[in-house]
Amino acid sequence: MKCPFCDSASSSVIDTDHDSRGGVRRRRKCKECGDRYTTYERAVKSLPYLIKQDGRREDFDREKLESGIRVACAKRPVASADITRLVGEIESKLLVMGKTEISSRVVGDIVIEGLKLLDQIAYIRYAIVYLGLSDLESLREEIDGLLV
Image (cartoon, rainbow, N blue to C red):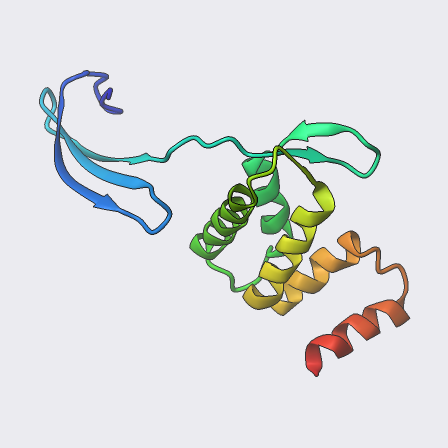
């Protein structure tokens, strides 16, 4: 592990912690410059290919998913950590399915359910695009469903 401050390859681990998703957080100290830094380790697992509505297949892209959720949550009181947690939960659900290919619609359904619990305004923003709410009547029906 290279020190991000001096590029030295010599460091020692001060503390190790495990998170609920199987990741490892390590606190390190550089033996050359003495600065401390944190590293995160996560097992690389094979995520399924996404089958788009037009039949194309593409790799699952965590950053693309997180970006879309961040857009829906823009200017809302949603913590960055909550968005990262939601993305991790979605990724975990896809891994548990154990499939090599999955419809992008399934991912969208998981996202929409997560946003409904996280922030209802972000949910509506995402739903307008994802569910194709193209008029005020369909938007009203969706909002009325939330208020029940």
